[in-house]
Image 1 (cartoon, helix red, strand yellow):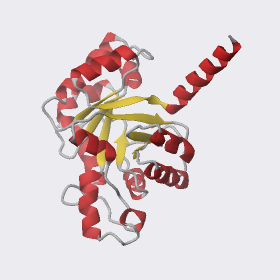
Image 2: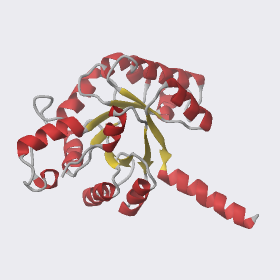
Image 3: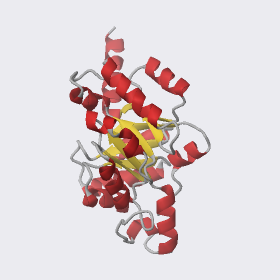
Image 4: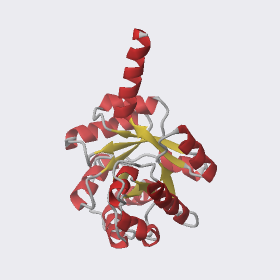
Amino acid sequence: MLTTNQARHAISEDRPAYGLLNAVPTPWMVEMIGYAGYDFVILDTEHMSTNPETLETMIRAAECASITPLVRVPGVDYASITRALDSGAQGIVVPRIRTAEEARAVVQMARYAPLGQRGITGGRTTGFGTLALQDYLQQANREILVVLMIEDLEGIKNRDAILSVPGVDWVLPGAVDLSQSMGCPGDPFHPTVTDAIDALATSCRDLPVEFCALPRSPDQLAQWQQWGARVFLLGEDRSLLYRHLKAHLNSCRA
């Protein structure tokens, strides 16, 4: 049954929310991230070939460890969005948003009437009927996060219109993909890329949309904290594991 969204709750109390991108698609990894103290985890189905049954089990693992499970879907796709939410995800992350029309379509797919037109079902999201349907619909509209990724120049140019769409909660920049779109592929630190991300963050200032920072260095983390960001995606479990395993081996050899 849908529970309180811990990441959303932290923001409502003006506390920062810290998360990781999950690229090791196993329940035990999700559970470990939760017990490590992170507020949210993004389960990736855009680049990872996670089957629906495994995804649902990973969402259960997040629930056990009291961490907010978000699912990155492949794109603006009704079936992917509703399947993730019906499995118990407390939010969706949608990549490559370029226009306000795409943002509105995502909101319609992710929220129930009167805020959207998400299809209604029962199952585990209502505790198999132990939560009244009307109560569930209201709770889902209140708790579920709609997170949009802006990853190319078109999305940056249309950022104000995208962020003004009612029902959008967070925006997340994709620095590496932005670097491709801006003619400096593979360089997320290029000034053109960082300027675009700064402009995206600035556009969130007077709107009820949280900017999710992706610091790639301690200096960037400090800068975004000083700027006033309240949501942080602190990397990916796969790369963190690799670096720590390699460092452990090298220290033992030394």
